[in-house]
Length: 300
Length: 300
Image (tube, rainbow over all chains, first blue to last red):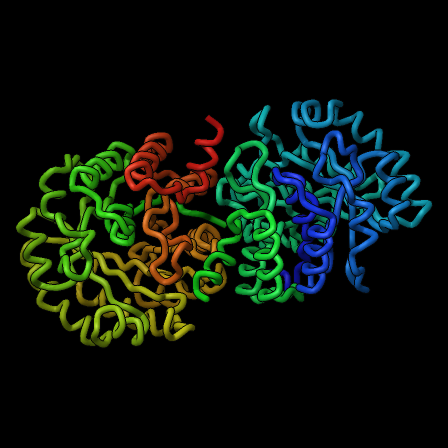
C-alpha cells in the first residue's frame, strides 16, 4: 500500500472555525491567529469570508483582517465568496484566491442558503467568469458528502454530480465535506472512488468533522485512496452547529500528528502550531479541541 | 481489501477505566455499570481487579462486585490478577477468566511494577499452572507497545518477544496496548505484522488509547491487518494517568460507531451502550468521553 509522500493541510480555523464560535473576536485577534498559522508553516489559510454580516456576524471585518495580516510568499490566503457581491468585496480587499460552496443534499441547500443545488451552482457562473478574467483561483466545497442533517444518507453519485459541476465550471480543486461528521472509513473510500471517476484524485480534498470521532480514521482511509489534501481547523475551532457541545472540524494538530507518524511531509512545525491553537483558545476562553495539544500541554 | 465480518469488543471500563478515576465509586454503582453493559450486548466485560487496595484503591470491593452482578450466559466476566494471591482471591470470588499483564518496556516495568519484564513473566508461571489445573482461561496484556512514557520508542520486535512468552505460557489471547496513545496507523500495522509472525492474528487484540486522537485510525489500520478484537472503555472512562486531563482508553461507543459503519457485526446495541455510559458519567459527575455519545446527546 503506497501512501502519498506529502500532503497539504488547508487551515480553515480562522474562517470555518471562528464563524461557529459564539463570542465576538476582534480583528487584532484574527490577524494574530493568521500570522501565527503562517509562522507555523501552513501553506494555505482560509482567512475570512465575504458574506453578509447579517448572516455570519463573526466574519465582519474580513477586509480589515486581509489588510493587516503579514502575507508571506508561498502561502495562499483565501476567502469564502459565495456570490458576485462577496467576490467583488474580496477583490477589493486584495484576495487572490476564493472558495465557493454547494451542498450535495437538496434539503441542506434549501435550509442553508435558501435555494436548490442547481440554483446555487448557476449563481457561481458569473463569479467563475470574473475570476477567470482576473486570474483568481477558485476552490470548490461540497457539503454533506457523507450524510445530511435533514435527509440522512447522501449517495456518492449525488456528490459526484455536484463536484463534477464545480470542476467543470473551473474550480481547480474540490473539497468534499463531511459536514456533520457521520461518515466512516468504508463510506469515505467509496466516496473518493466514485467522485474520482470524474475528477482526478490529486484535485480532490477531504474535509472531515470529528463530531463522531471518525475524522482521523477517515483521513487515513482517504490517504489510502491517494487523497493528500485535507481541510482542518487549529485547536478544532468551530464546534458543530448541528450538535451543540459536540466536536466540529478535525483539529489540525491531530491530523498533523497522524501524517507525521506516517512519514508524510507537510512542512508544518507542530510546536508552533500548538502555540497558535493555545493562543486563540486563551482568547476564546475555551478548552482546546485538539487531543494532541491537550496531551502535550498536560505533559509540560 | 477484506475486513473482518465480525469483531469482539472487550469492555475494560469497569476496570481499566474506573481504576483511573479519582473519586471513590460504590460497589452498587460498579454493579449497575456492569449490568448495564451486559444488557447492551457486550460479550466480554473486565469487571475488576484482584490487586492490593494499597496500590489500586478503586479496585477494592471487586469480590463484592462479582458476587452482585447478574452474570448472563454467553458473556465473559473477567478480572485482572497480577499474581498468585490475586488469582486465589479471584477464584474465591468465582471468577472464571483472568488477565495478566507485562510491559514491552523495561523502564515502564520497573516504574510500574518494580521488577524487570523477565521477572514479571516468571511470576506468572505458578499462576498459569494453577489456572490450567482449574480450567481458568488467561488473557495476556502487553503495555507500551507503541511507545513508553520513559523510554520513548519501543521496537516491534521487543513487543513480539514479550507477547510470544505470554502466548507460550498459555495465554489464549494477547492484547497489545498503546498505553500512552502515541502510536499511529503505520506503526500499528507494522506491529501486528511483526507480532503476527509468532502468534496467529486471530489470537491478538488491540488496546488503543485516544490520548493523541489516533485510536480509531489505529483500529481501522488493525482491521486491515486482520485483527478483530479490541479493548475499549464505555464513555472513554479512565483518562490518561500519564497526561492529566487528556483522553485515555478509546470510547466503546466510538469504536462501535466505526465498526457499524464498516458493516462489522458486534452484537452490541448502541442506544443501550450510550445509556450505560451516560449513567456512569452522571455518577462520576464528569463529561462523557465518547464523541458519539456527546453528539447523540446534543441531538436529543
